[in-house]
Image (tube, rainbow, N blue to C red; front, top):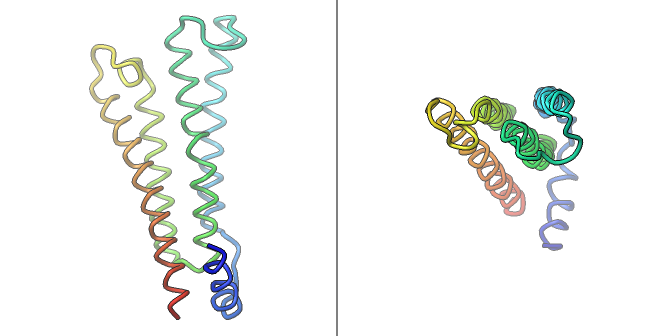
Length: 160
C-alpha cells in the first residue's frame, strides 16, 4: 500500500496539477440540503409525538429516522471518494455521472422510504418499495463503481 502511495506521489502528482473538486461541491451541496430536509421531518415528528430519544413504538418515526440515517451513513464516504477522484484528474463527465447517479439514487431512496409500504413492507404502495429498491441499488452501484474506477485510475498512474 505504501509503495502505491509513493509511486503515485513521485509520478502523477508531480506531473499534474490537483484541482478543486467543483463538481463534488455541487453534489455535496445537493446532498446536504436533502439531509437537512430529512432531519427536519424527524424533528417535527418528534415534537408532535413528544418523543425525545428513540422512536417508541412509532413506526412512522422509525421510518423517518432510518431515512435520514441511511443517507448520513452513505453520503460522507461517497462524497469524499468522489472529491478524491475529481482532484486526481478523473474526467468531468465521469465525475458528473457518478455524482448524478448517487444523488438520483438518494432521492429515490428517500421517496421510497416516504411511506410504511416502502420502509416496513406494509400493504399497498408497490411504487414505494420499487423506489426504495432502486435507490438502494443505485447507491450501492455508484459507490462500488466509483471505488473500482478510482483503483483502476490509480493503477494506470503507476504504469506510466
